[in-house]
Image 1 (tube, rainbow, N blue to C red):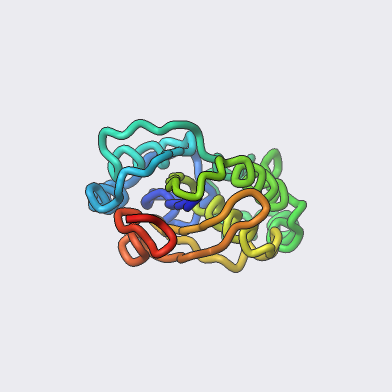
Image 2 (cartoon, rainbow, N blue to C red):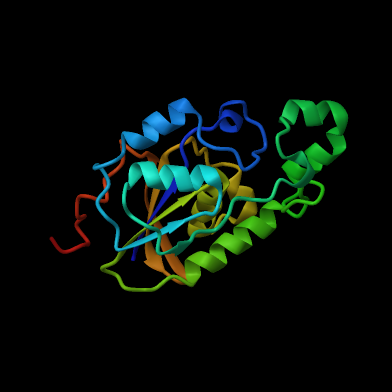
Length: 202
């Protein structure tokens, strides 16, 4: 199948580089998400992560379309929700350093990068394998990073090396055990799911 992963639009936390709470999109995020309406073809399957920011992005970018199921949630930030790395570096630099260098270390009460990549990989590999279908999942940026890392076989360390801004679109093709990265970039600058690619019938 062709799997599109769309990072949610901007929130106050994403602009300030803070660990997110379940906050809504900010005004700029609502505007840019709405600008995608009509530019994305109706996917065969639509998934949306449960957060308010992902639900709002879905509603604005694909108005009137209800999700067919849940996409993977973003990583649980635990006690770091709403905090910035600068604040944490001043209060508990050892814990922040461990999180940044050890894939099995997570925020207090939160999820590690290793667990996130493993969870996202399990979801991807359980998707239907119809090569003609197009699926779109609206998710948090770390989920896009985890999916790309899994696709490239780069493991959790590879997720750190993927930059994902709000409304980044990753296009993957394949099925369980074999995924390929087709494109990665701003949603308005990569091949639209409105247009059939060379490996899809017109």
